[in-house]
Image (cartoon, rainbow, N blue to C red; front, side):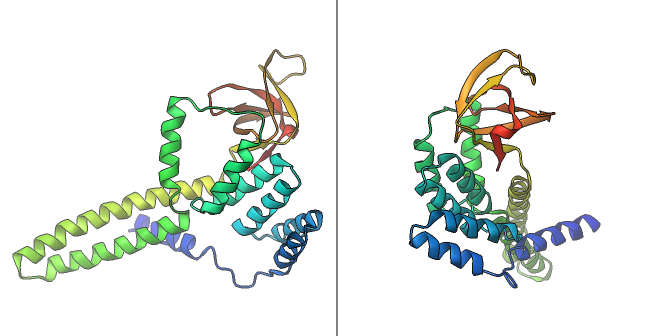
Length: 253
């Protein structure tokens, strides 16, 4: 019973976490006005101020990415598109602009076979945000309860069987979408990926200045953070290559 209550509170928290009451959109509107006038530096300042005020907004990150793209700063364009995608993973405009920006980077890193399968699964789960999956979960669970009520109250055998089996299907869908919602929430709140923001970075075999040089990556490349030691961070690429670089060379998504 306590577990069910915790799950219900978690789902309700996700559904209502995007409440926009009380948000001051002045800086966002100012940024949009500057962007239409091609005043990208002023637009960036406005969008950053809006975000620094504690407003997590896919639109703000997306618009910020567009400003950096117009300034031909692909590293920060990709960084902000990726941040926007975390908040709105199924938004087609974000996906398209991110794809275009990635085409302008130096490194074209092909994922290994296991990463391809993982990317396919990631794409499926990204169909909805954590809030979207939570809403589906709650709706399916309510339908499940309704159908189980039919099972217990109906006198007709066919209705009882339909109520039970369809209710079980709805329960299974509810559990599955809860898992998807929790997975999306975990990704949203984690910071295990980053974008290379330095023009060119030499990845080494150890977190020291005189370590063996392994390979070079360039600005805009997406990396997965393995661990951090001192001023160095161990990273992994989509193709499986792994090594160390200075933490200051990357910015977390």
